[in-house]
Length: 105
Image (tube, rainbow, N blue to C red; front, side, top):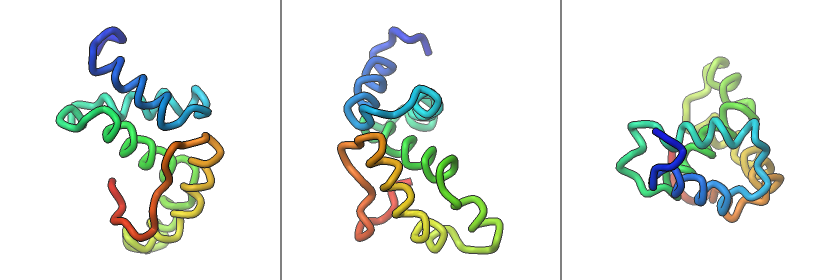
């Protein structure tokens, strides 16, 4: 997908609006995941949100270690929710994961 497509521009805009302070080293994998073929049916802001949560979960929390230790997906996600929200807050995210809502990704 070229950088000039409408979808890519929409993803870039959604990423900037959702995570204004995200470092480039994190924004690029989030941008790539949001633009993946399996995300094409989702509106860009939702694709960016799902990609961002998955990225933070796997790159900035103990989620994968918890899964390796035998925790089921829901339990591991429960234990890393605060860490995800701390990272989102650091990046000045315009929304956080709500512990009362079902995990989106």
